[in-house]
Length: 35
Image (cartoon, rainbow, N blue to C red; front, side, top):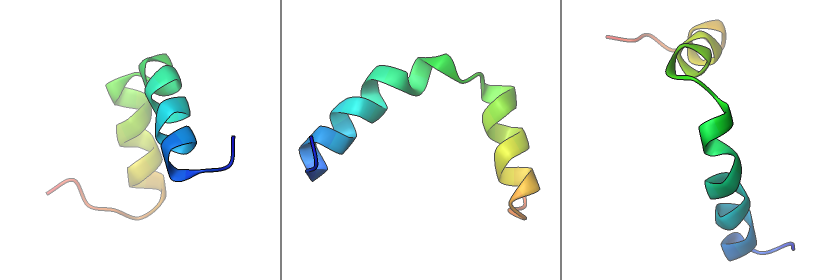
């Protein structure tokens, strides 16, 4: 489904497939500072 609601629904379904460490690594690799 191509809507904002559909996007958030999909994100809600897959969010638990990523660990906090994986998320931290992604943001670190993208250049974001954890501080």
